[in-house]
Image 1 (cartoon, one colour):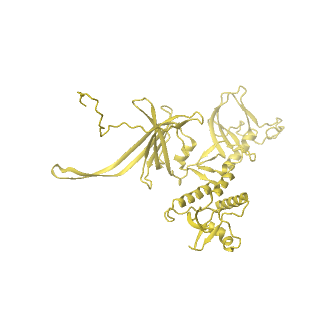
Image 2 (cartoon, helix red, strand yellow):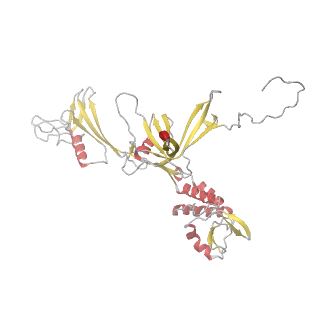
Image 3 (cartoon, rainbow, N blue to C red):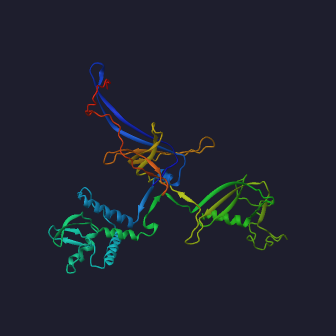
Length: 440
């Protein structure tokens, strides 16, 4: 789900092409044909979120069901299709994965244990028709039938069968593909958020960030820099080290690493002791060498920083999110539901209107303008309405709402049917006993 509640503009444009048969005097139009109906939805959002950017730029924003929820969906779908006697060819049964079947087997076993009986969800051979049928827990598995135990798992992993009339204990009955008790048992297994599912986007944890900044020394006593630290960090940079965080200072005039130089051009303190160690005389000039030097207040310099995600174990720190735009991923087709309201002239009250687009594809064309003046950048989306199998491109629904004080937001208020119409027939009125001069 992507919820946009800061839209500035929403426009729905419908267009169609028309051709006409023309002829006769004046080449007048005789018959017209309309075709090629198109509906385009344009949205302009005042704000944008990582989720909306993932949808447009990365093209990936979808929910992934866990094996628990997907098994429930597939079982309910098979039972629903069976009740409606849908054609097996027109509506093929949803195939369960091995992980989903293991959950179904576990739930069926637990149901049998809960009922303290030998009733289990099993597969039996229908001798009369030669077809395999899913039996419900109302069927008592016969221990003397080795065929059931032998083929049970293989048959269940192949396909679903619809609800069908079978004979159990000599009585005609309808058996579900999978008993509702099994589905209810699977629901009880969902006790963690990850067992519901996940949301797939093109947004990931940021592992490292490289930044350049222009800085100025503001401390009264200046900025003290360690040559030893500079040397170590420069080597890290050239080695491509992405496992640790470090900082390198650069000269604003030369764009070279900021170091202290002697009169003859040598770097002061390059071979000095590490920072924090006791300095000593390396060049035997009688002066103890130090790796630290200070740049004075007001000096402009550049700072390069590489920040790496802090890792301490299970409770890793985070430094941000990375949004990935690849060349192979484009926006998918989605269902779009929008709400607006109209104001009734007579009552002055607002009525809600909802438009529903059952299938639409989001255009990957978008732009973000960065400028120093003018209005803030908006996030625009162009959406092309597709034609679903039922040929309904868009629906408009009118309803009334009121404040929902219990759950928050609003709730839909059912209204009585009200019609204003002019009758086409007039009932005969009884005689009032005097002449009525009025004419109606």
